Image (cartoon, rainbow over all chains, first blue to last red; front, side, top):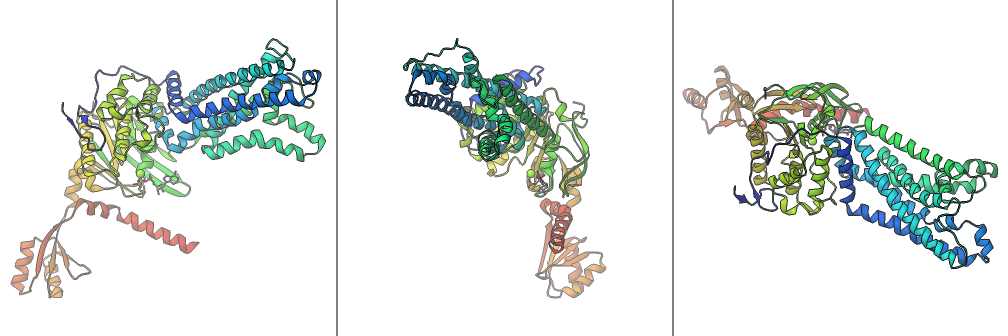
Length: 284
Length: 314
Ligand SMILES: Nc1ncnc2c1ncn2[C@@H]1O[C@H](COP(=O)(O)OP(=O)(O)OP(=O)(O)O)[C@@H](O)[C@H]1O
Ligand SMILES: [Mg+2]
């Protein structure tokens, strides 16, 4: 076997027989496990993904710390701080980190449509719901991990800041552990919601706009609503509903932590349902 | 391999809006030979290939691979390897990771990635971002992906587009070797000249409709009627003379006569006997490209016409 410069340019090549097999392939199957491994390889092998997650983490922790510092310096007395919700203050950064999660969730699918890679993916595994489900599982796991790290870091640093003012909060206090773990869950479900929108809309910019609109712009309208309406409607907005999970005290007119989060999960389920349904019946 | 059809399309039709991209196509593709899928731009080649792979759903009709719809394959990559669009990869991912992610979907062994990289000569650049690849290297990566599952069927959509002559020859020989191993090779092109040396069998489409389905040899015999270009200062008398002798004569714009149905020597003798001066007498073998254009010309004319009508209608 000789090597020669390759006619298509690039490095020199040996010229073996086209099959190029060193040993015959045994019987193989395309399985869900295979799809999971494939999606994990995809997600870890693009640098942009990594940086999006770093931004999510840095923004969450950074803003949380700033808000904690702001809170302790603006409130006059220790009692004032205790009457507030130190845990919730220490987790405020999630509002910002969530933006990066919207990008992460949408890009997991829209990047494949943008490059045309989706056709290669659906050729290798023509059962499209298998591909989407595997993506969703990997994406949720990664978002949950980043969310939990962000959440615990934000809370632990925030608790130190509050402790400096003599206000002590710990993971053992009522509802605190739920709120901190809730931060991770909130991020994971946000990524899933955005992934569903991405699967339905296929375009990166459109999906991110839709995700940001649904999460962050919708609440802006509440200021234009008549009071009675507002109290009835506002709690149903995705960010308001989901956000209850990172508080330890119930806010007026809002759902309780788990009910609110359940509503948020419903939004994600609907988005995913539409995304899966459209993906299955459309031409790729 | 029993030689039976591997890809089988029946009444395959695809409509986009009120436009028929593929119109009632029925054909089969057999193993052990290279089957060329030929048609001018917009004829519906890519659409047909996407339907074979289940990427686009037919409006009506069916297409099967090894007797069943491709989407029901247990190990899709073992059955079909396809190069649809070499640029359709995430540029930020290395060639190695791109191939690994594909191999994993079908639980193919990891060593297979190294093998196809070796095979297409990409081993040295395997860890580089594929976004930086040249056109030719991108094409090689697409071929590497198609070969991952060591499939029985290979489908290439315009694999030599944008490649230089050496690259074209490499791919051509590659496809011939794959077919020689008993595989089914289905390759599209809009150039007859390309298929002439690559394909054994031809499926020609124009405007989504089947125009020809025959061996390349048969296509050549059928379509390479000889003609003779004749220049004469007395074209009128010559035309009458040749027509009487049973030839079909056409006058070209520059006054040259195109004569079909008579040998050059016979034309010369006839003219000499009748005392008609001939200044030029040149036999002319119609190229396959011309035959192919001829075959799909009606379709193109129809298109020009319908566009015109739409303009008037608007
Ligand atoms: N997704 C789509 N939506 C609307 N029209 C389409 C779509 N895909 C293809 N078409 C139209 O269908 C026809 C056939 O296109 P197709 O790409 O299959 O042709 P082709 O033979 O591959 O052409 P080419 O040689 O240019 O690649 C064209 O007129 C094209 O404009
Ligand atoms: Mg095409």
